[in-house]
Amino acid sequence: MTLIETLEKLSNACGVAGREEEVRSLMKKFLKPYVDEVVEDKLGNVIGIKKGDKNAPKVMLAAHMDEIGLLVKIISKEGFLHFAKMGGIDDRLLLAQKVMVYTEKGPLHGIIGSKPPHIQKEEERKRVLSWDELFIDIGAESREEAEKMGVGIGDTVCFDVKFARIGKNIVIGKAFDDRVACAVMIEAMKGLQKTECTVYAVGTVQEEVGLRGATTSAFGIDPDFGIALDVTIAGDTPGVKEIEAPVKMNKGPSLTIADSGLIVHPKVLRLLIDAAKEKKIPYQLETGLPGSTDAARISLTRSGVPSGVISIPTRYIHSPTSMLSLKDAENAVKLTIAAVQKIPEY
Image (cartoon, rainbow, N blue to C red):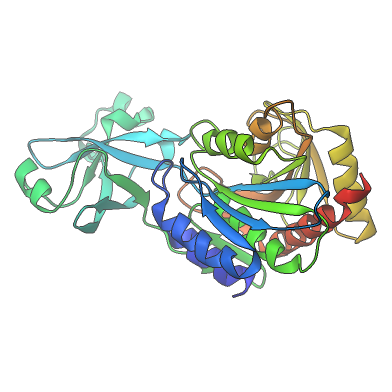
């Protein structure tokens, strides 16, 4: 499979934080041909292991499998579903979104609704409706009917968005944060035909709710180097100042210098920059981001792990639909391979 084919399947799968089963199954399948062993740990992280030389460094690559989404919280007596948010979602983006509710009897179509604007008072129309004022309408007429349809408290709700290619190198889809990095990691393992290092390609769980899967998997692996593969804000859209988000789409993967949870180890930053320069791979640098990645937890494992981040610039992350350039994803694959192969020199 090609990078875009892998990304399409991963993007269309549902894997809200803590409910990554569908994505985990795909990750095991896609990693298996390119590693010596695939294991699943107790928390649900998928770990593909490519064995290297006996005394060579252990490298952990991490791309999180989970996505933002919703969970059913209450079924009203009228049959509407009230929900809780899983991960950081802007309330402004929720209203009127099509969703899929994953029940024990299979997925159900739904739409996020509210009081119609036609009958709202003027002051109501001016404010953003909070998530707890919204509901999911699945067409049920009562709680009993909703339950007969299979709905239960805690059911996963994903945005109903399908992957599409809209230009030569541009794609849109759901959950590019972080399915594109999962696809990049798989392609990198495919390209690492031979490496001195032992490489652990980890699809982590529950990143969106606290970097949890990276915390436990890194403890079990105890790597010598860590590289998180993730997305970052592409700030090349109207209304965004360069000082807020300097990274641009189509200009190459981004290398983090520092974010809210990690100051990248100088040795790892130098490694990534040197690898990019040697292979003539375009790259960007960014610092001061308010968020963080799995690398923040990997770096604090046991006695500490020198860690860095390779990110794919992505527009509209943490929304139902995102956009990215396949060129940036392909260059992220090349940079990941080049960096892993160069690690023994450091």
